[in-house]
Length: 338
Image 1 (spheres, rainbow, N blue to C red):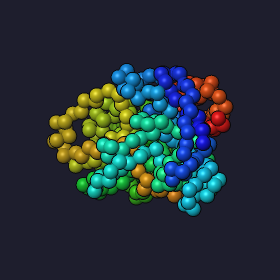
Image 2 (spheres, rainbow, N blue to C red; image 1 turned 90 degrees about the vertical axis):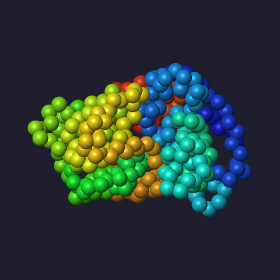
Image 3 (spheres, rainbow, N blue to C red; image 1 turned 180 degrees about the horizontal axis):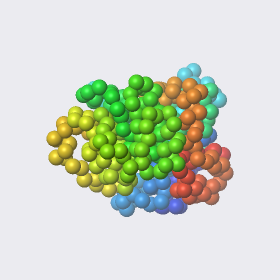
Image 4 (tube, rainbow, N blue to C red; image 1 turned 135 degrees about the vertical axis):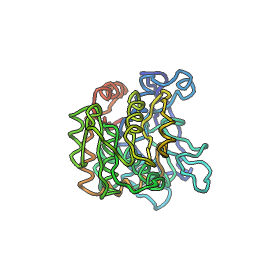
């Protein structure tokens, strides 16, 4: 079975590659239907990664947030026509106590291997989770929803004091989903969001408090913090967290930046803080995220961060979608028609 793969061969240039899929390889074959652009995809597309990394990674198909429909299954675990979310992480050898997304021999689609910009995708059944009954545009963002589920799990294991008051630094999509998931996981916690954009902060009507970063009230304190800024904002967010977090607090680092970020280690040591790095997720997080999205209220809230849905009928439409994503305040979803 021949499938098209739409690979980024250099910044802003996509080429078509052909791949033969063996229907006897024991894998499930899925046709992608909706995808969502991640900031990581944008960094590759616009050439914002280090040149050496781009030379190593490209050519490569982008996108790791995707849902599709089963077109072939070698057994009865999935039915033809069933809607599924694809798990981009291919875990390596299992190590006791180690999360699958941190294993050194794991491979991640759209980072170390082709992503889901393909006509057909073949995956082991273990890398698929049924999402029947969930609006497909929202199901496409399931991978994004798994990130705060994974972070919440690691936070629960790491926290040394009561949950208390949690500060979330970042008013973008990651901060929004993190706030939603923390409200779901820790309903008694007091959650406040600190951001830079008053319009975006208005989206967080379900949290206890919102603040502009440059207008924090005097004496403002949190017990724990989640840094969801990334990019140039990581340094300023981490600095402000360390200035305002209570002793023995836990700081969850979730924002991705290409730059090295200086950290006031003297204050980290003085207050006995715990810093936990969180990246990506595993199958259990996908199962939790899908279950979360089956709740209508949760699904409606997640749908609010879809800024635009772009129909993809040609390579030119892919180019257009990435240009639009640059200016969209939240998520750009692609209806994959090619």
